[in-house]
Length: 283
Image (cartoon, rainbow, N blue to C red):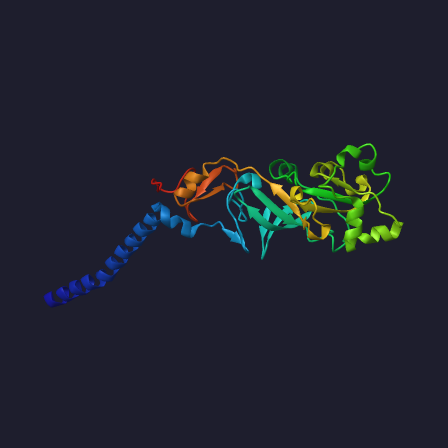
C-alpha cells in the first residue's frame, strides 16, 4: 500500500512539470510582447499604415489607410496598384508628391491634351479640398473652343490672362488634337487661359467652352511649344501642426482616431498614444 502511494506521488509530480514549463513560457512571451510595445525602434515594424503606393512614398499628412495621416486629408487618396486623388468629379492619378515643396501633381486620364481630344467634363473639388489642397498659381486651365457669347469673353473677360506669351492660335495650330476646332470653323475659335477659381465657380456649360486642358509649371514655359508642355494639375498643401516629429522620433506613425478624429501616435496594431511611443525619445 505504501509503495502504491509513493508511486502515485512520483507520477503526479512528473506530470506537473510540463504544465509548469508551459506557464513559464507563457509568462516570458507576455513580457517580451510588452517590451516590444515599449521599445521605440520596434513599434515601426508593426505599424498598420502603408508607407508607399506603387513608387510613391506615403508620408504625413497623407494616408491611404483610414486613421493614418491627418484627418483633414481623410479619404482623399486611394491605393490600388497606383495612387489616386479622389474628388467629386473623378479619380486623378497621382504623378508625384514633393514633401519638401508640399505639392502634389495629379493627372486626369480623361483630360484632353495636345495629342488627344476627349469628351469634356468639369473639374470639381470639395470645399475642404479647395481650402487645404488647391491647385497652385502656376497651374493654368486652358478653356478651348469657347463660344463668342462665353462669359469669360464678355462680362468676365478679366478672368482670362496672358500665359507666358502663348496664344489661342498657337494652341490650335501646334496640337493635332485641337486642330479639329480650326477645321470646323475655318478659323481659330476663342479660348481662355485662366486659373482654378474660374472653373471652381463656373461649370463648363456656363463657361460655354467645349473642352479644357491643364498645364503645370507655367512660369517656366515661355518660348516652349505646346507639344512640350507638362499637362496635369499641381496641388499645394499646408502641413498641419500635430506634433508629428515627436511621434516619428519615438518610432510611431502620425494618425487619428477614426471615430473622434482626435490626434494619435500609432505605435502598433494594438497600442496607440496621444504624443509618442514609449517613454524615451531617441536623440
